[in-house]
Amino acid sequence: MRVWIALIVAMVLAWAEGNKSAYFKVLMEHQNPYIFDKTQRLELQKERLRAQTTQKVAEFEYKKAVDVQKIKKEQTQIQSQSEVKKEEVAVTPQKQMVEVKKKMLLYALLGFLVFLVVGYLAFKRYHSYKEKIELEKMRLQEALHEKEMAMRERELQAQIAGKLIDAVASGTLSKEQEEKLLGLATGNNLLENKR
Image (cartoon, rainbow, N blue to C red; front, top):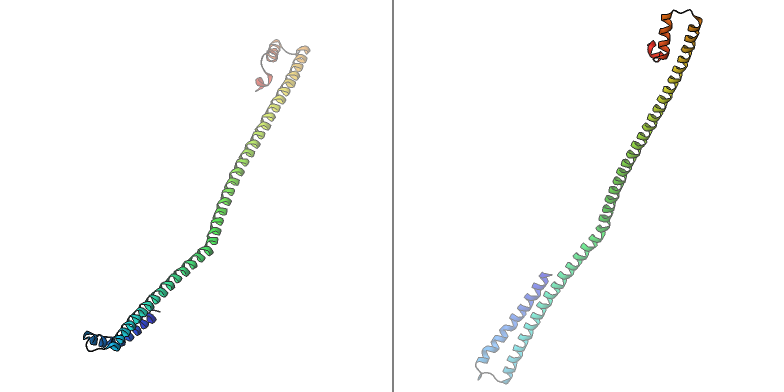
């Protein structure tokens, strides 16, 4: 486009140069007013007007070419800006999708961690509850065992006491043995003495 502008300007200047020689000829003759007559003066004015018109046309063409270039430049800028905006509009949903995926992944990770913590706490609570129940069972078994042992001990004491009474009543024991057996029966636990 610049080549065309330069070419137009060169053509206008060449045409003005061709008219300039006629204009200078008339101007030279005009310096000596006695030589010219009225028709030549009119010709001189016509040439002057033609030269001015040509110059104005050349200026107008130049301004027109410059304005066209400015408009084209602005148009390309607007097009490039619209293309950039289109690309931004096209890229924005993709960026939003990436952000949404990141947030979803973060929430999933946080949810999983919360699930693990809650699961761990529930397991620990269940385990402690189970241990508590086991300890309670063991305590109850131990209490039952102690009751059973105490009962057996009483039964054994009753049996031994019955045998002692039978032995003392039979009169076959010596005095020393009788005192020993009575001391055992009245004094301490019989099972402890047997040990």
